[in-house]
Amino acid sequence: DQQVKQNSPSLSVQEGRISILNCDYTNSMFDYFLWYKKYPAEGPTFLISISSIKDKNEDGRFTVFLNKSAKHLSLHIVPSQPGDSAVYFCAASPNNAGNMLTFGGGTRLMVKP
Amino acid sequence: ETGVTQTPRHLVMGMTNKKSLKCEQHLGHNAMYWYKQSAKKPLELMFVYNFKEQTENNSVPSRFSPECPNSSHLFLHLHTLQPEDSALYLCASSQVFTGLGGYTFGSGTRLTVV
Image (cartoon, rainbow over all chains, first blue to last red; front, side, top):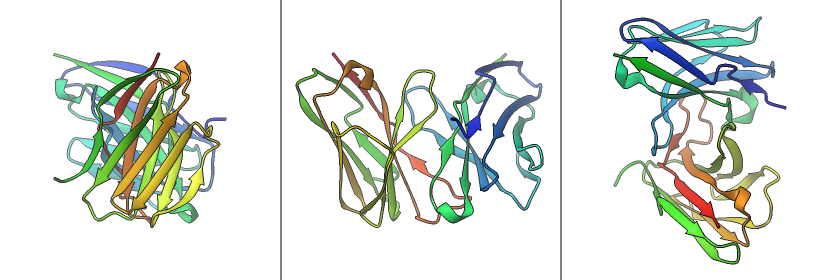
């Protein structure tokens, strides 16, 4: 049973527009939520994170929103650039499990010039 | 070198072979991990080592045998694998209480079992 789900396997967006990637989770014990970005033939790289005490965290073009009541988080990329084309994974961990991250299945984002 | 380095990048092995994957980190982290990424599946946690001690074995078959001789090195010994074990094997490291910091991943070893 997947505790972290990314229901959209792929997303295509025009350059300059907003990309919205979604993630749902089932474990109410999750306290930390992270997004990773993965290019082909490379390992995932950390992008942005948020703790459960916040509902929004922003870093440049990237903003993560957390809706705890809905057990839903989203990553917004504005404006989208062709270099953002990659697979995006959301991940979560409980506060009492230190370093145990559970990952979603990933969403492939394609930004068209 | 910095970051997390995995070798080899690609490996093709027969079902009767024995091979090892190597991971090395120079970030001063005290936790290391093996993940498996199969096609169209989420990243699956295999093993966790905190302070060189194995703290998690996520029901991994015994044909995969991890070894962590020190906090900077992690190995995955492979023997009598099956074709369905073909996947990308990712190593990662972090501080034990990583919180919002997350992991640092290596580039992975693409394993093909023939």
